[in-house]
Image 1 (cartoon, rainbow over the protein chains, first blue to last red):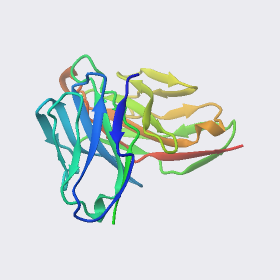
Image 2 (image 1 turned 90 degrees about the vertical axis):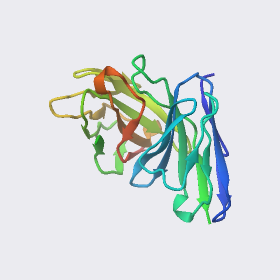
Image 3 (image 1 turned 60 degrees about the vertical axis):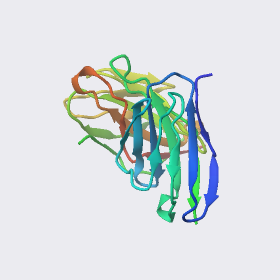
Length: 115
Length: 116
């Protein structure tokens, strides 16, 4: 089954304690991205990756890091989480380039609470 | 830059009522347009899409027509059901030079609640 898998689905942590949210896709997609969803703000892009070893900032990258060492994986790293990073996070992937229409496939989301 | 504006919510309807959720956009080039739906506790799922002007996307009784002249992509359904209760997001994908590069710009989402 084609899917995007995120872990953990739920996490409560404390300020400053490093954490990683993993994301894996099995569709051989080149493009992967992280979004955060906040009430009244819709989804905002954090980081994206066009392919292995190619990453770039989205609209709200501050406080986050990413890496893309393998095509299927795109972890999101919070080196020193703060309460304003409490949010619902989504990983997504897409087949980019002229063969795609830009449709994104989403994971089920990771709800993070930073105390 | 690209932007998407959706009608303010929440929207509350009775079962079998007609639904319209307005969406307008600002973009350069020829974007693809999407409606995504998010059911409670789940991720976003593609509901329908349109890739060029005058295209009509449709799925599960929902429809939306890509109107380039009014830069709109309004979502409609003739008769909603309780199971349609969800958050609906309008989105666009930049399509500069005919190459889609994957980033979606989302509207703020519209919460729909349908009562029996």
